[in-house]
Length: 482
Ligand SMILES: [Zn+2]
Image (cartoon, rainbow, N blue to C red; front, top):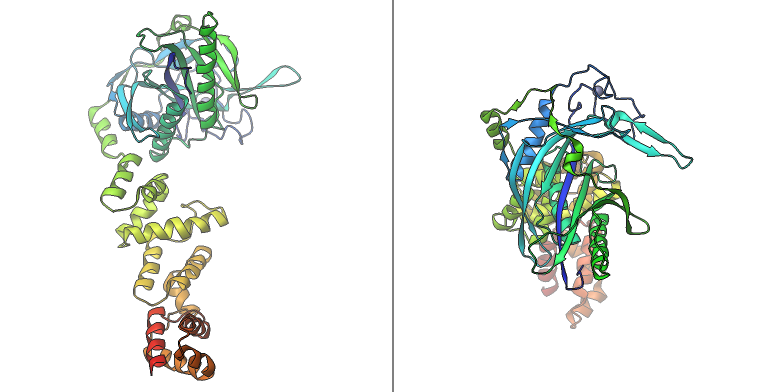
């Protein structure tokens, strides 16, 4: 949104992503679904902040965090220190959060995003660090609040960008790309509604051409991409109006009201000093082994951007098809497996996007639930190219593969669906149809060429759609010319 042409918005993002580990960051409690699990069913003295309990670092959480840091082109810091961030709030039982401050896990990364006009913009990443999530408060309308500590101590990765973003739309595109990478890496589900992935933009505006930064506000409660884009743009417009009125923007945290679609003041923002950070005395410095970092780097999957480019440039797919197939890692892996099994890339893309996705929608199944295998899809397309079945029969066979899990060969054999490519057998059927429809034959010979299509229809009907269409056409031509 334009800030009335006078101002430029300067936006940095803080993205918090819970890591999908089995256990929590510093104790053995399970990581459970924060919406579905009964409250306070996955807690222990460590994550409840009981006195005298000692944290132990979850190495899987560090592994996951390193995947993200490396995928975001960051420099990993081998010497890490955990820090105490002190503040008092009922969702934080220890009254401090174990986080990282001066020595974070990784720094100086970047991610390129593609803007709607096709331009590529590089967003710099200031830091990526590990911390633990807090509990969850539910405020009751009748007064009072309930607290659920299942989330307390869940590994939380924080990604902080430089203030390189200038609009709600850019914030949305960047976050959407990060979400896709997190899902590709298998470290986060990307569920913003459940708060597993949370994004908080800090937003300020300044007169165009100015180098100084304006007073910023931080925006919370954004539980969708639309809320992120709209809330950010609302805040830019609001701050512009404040400055235009000759007033000053207040540094504060503001919430987004999703139904009224406005931001509102929540609390005046703390400065870093207010948190009284100091090195966490219960944890030793975390020294990362270079070989471990390189092992993780080597095991990174091909990421969405590289995959899309390969589909377009090497496999010759259209931009649209490449984007659709690379969108989700499991879909892309299905496609890759089909191509590896000998499938023609364009044919496999068509079968998946046109037919398989339609069946998945109809049956509300995701790609990792379907009974059709990549090899099955290749076999199906080979039956068509080998003229064993025609393409309309193939659509029916795929539907049956989807429900029964049988191979296309089994289905074709069991149901007698093989295309009739036996010339003698088909010639006999053609001859019979011409014999039984003498007046149409006479019309055709008198010049009514449109009847050709009708004859083809009769042959298809007589063969339950299984005639080889090319052969049926040729035999019709020959016999009608006789
Ligand atoms: Zn615990």
